[in-house]
Length: 300
Image 1: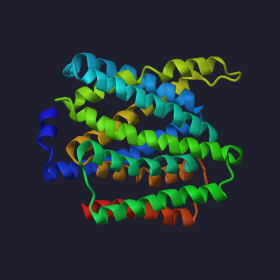
Image 2 (image 1 turned 120 degrees about the horizontal axis):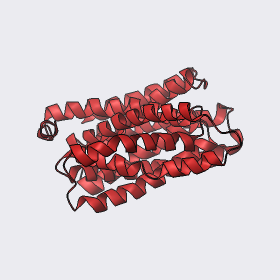
Image 3 (image 1 turned 30 degrees about the horizontal axis):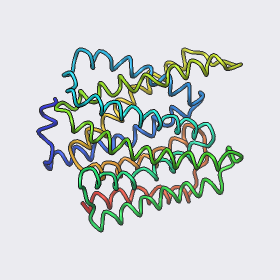
Image 4 (image 1 turned 30 degrees about the vertical axis):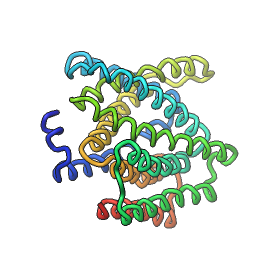
């Protein structure tokens, strides 16, 4: 599997597979965000998810993939710090704001800085048409956020701080997207990076979630919470694995932009599952997001 994937790097078949992987990651990432924002406290949901995928990743990391090369340990340490900061910011943002407000801002801030980071780290460049696509996509994402800010009635008293946290979270999305792309390219076997990443990434949030759960007056039942954690872990494997493999096969910037069509899926999930309002104006803005992604792909 690893040899087949690495053999596709830089080829047209690799480009097409990267496109499929990035769009799959978009859908899965929206599902993942909804799982964290859903019925449980976001800190508890994230703790359950991280515990689950850490446990699942352990046998793969220890027994099934090649051991990381010595130069990979500082890379894992830096990725650990970046992802921990991202998760803290995201949990705070979801605690303060409605999902359909926070999520578009997070995802809208990320791709622009990820494209810049891809240029700085990998020398990637976008054509004029692709930059037009980025502008259209960002107009849709931030238009959606502004519309929600004006008309959505949920969590109005904490909306300002939620938006600031969402912007900060988006910056860390860009950081981890570009740095993890560097990490997965730095090892011979991409699955070595993924397995060890999930093992390390599952260490921080579970103890915090346990402390938070113990301090609650009305504690949620653990069985449904852990079931959500297991489902979220599987989604996380597929989502993060897809986008990381896409960045190894093809351009990091293109994959980062295409993943932000997750905002469309997130709005649909917010409407259908979380019962948050969606109207014709928001549908039009979501169409802008999809159009921007298409322009980026055609322009490349």
